[in-house]
Length: 282
Image: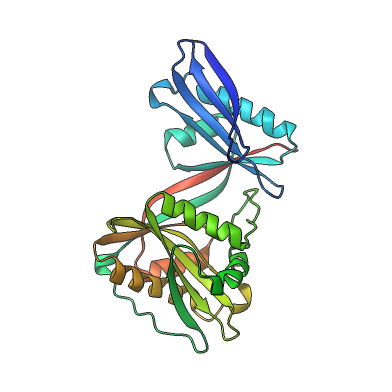
């Protein structure tokens, strides 16, 4: 079978896209490189139809992505998380990609949760749904740097740059999928947000919610705010969505602090995933 690779450009973000087709025009797979906004490495996503795997389609798509990224002067391509022992991991290893990060996925059974939120002197908790309010938008954007030093091991990862516009864009994207974004934040004595945690829930309030991120600014750590935030959000979610079954989280194995918090709250491991990377500079 002949495989034809066609190069396209994502009209919304300008990211390069490749489509693999058979000699009869059948779509076999695709690849996309998500270019960084401020320099650094790019994210790579490759998808091949299960019936077309082990025929070199993924390898050809990968070669096209690597050639494009090298030509753009990018330092690395960071692949998606692949489940340990899966066909995705086998492909990454066979392609010579380097393992750079391990993630453990966990689930909290909301029906059996029995934690208590407590409080931290001088701080207060706030919740909101969807886009952040105008009153808190500026401080929320500033608080996002709490995620900048999260453990990423050897991954060529660059911290995201956040502003109010991006906050609204993300909230709109979640709403556009018919899902609900809930944010819980802790306000410091000076009125600034000291930390936050986010969860996305299906529009009908059933199934499992997915945590998006939890972070506490360095200058506010060591006070138990991360645990307080998590418990306060769990209580809010249970009250708002009584039919929700659980909450899902993924945490780097090296993120000892957050793993300890989640373990203490009753999050239990479900599986592990691995992150692989292609280094483009020697």
